[in-house]
Length: 295
Image (cartoon, rainbow, N blue to C red; front, side):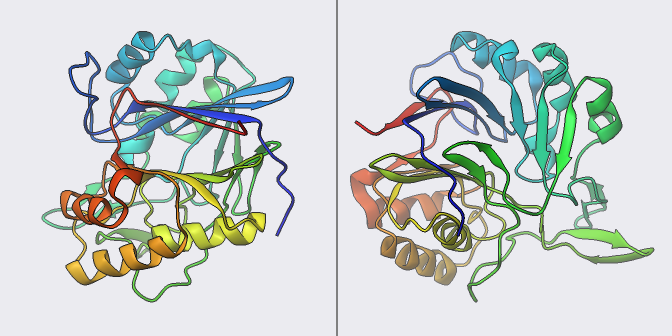
């Protein structure tokens, strides 16, 4: 457990997701991107979590939301997948600053691919390599440990796999010492905010480490067991029914006040989220603005 401090407020804008809010002009894409605005009295930080895979759509949505790329001071990449990282260099060019930090796991640039139905690279694309990020002015900071983004807001670091029913959710491969090996997506990282008087807000990318493992780590990291919000993808889209139901049962034990799940969560899992949590669950949509504060 570490003292990550507390935020007075957190605003989460959903810049990219697989669907959009009803009757809106936003553009959807397969992927996610969130803009976090954390406030701590006099300190305000603007942190971009993932960039989806389509920069044009992302920038279109940012413009509609009145978000200026130049305000972004930090980018967190939750894992290597192209639908979370493609176009990060284009975004850096739009930000136009030389003091932007990119925070990610130490293995994020590894070879990463699927082999069915054919071999296809699904990790960070060549145009978004570490070298290209640094050419665009970013400081790339890689760590397996939790990284404090500001007082009250931290990455989880590498997620410890504690449950016996959660898995990556897709057959992924990597290469080590010239051999093809199973890839367990050890770089899967989430963000945890601690809101004064409210508890934790957890922001995930795809939850390849398992949403319950992520919540357990957030609780252990902060020493707080009160969950005010969970936002992101749960990667249950191809999960068997038994895993979905077990996830709901375990998730209910945390008594989250609000859940906003989409992207790779899957329709069947969203149905069970509604059946379990009723009005506390809302499907994630591009264009949402979610607010969490001490008041």
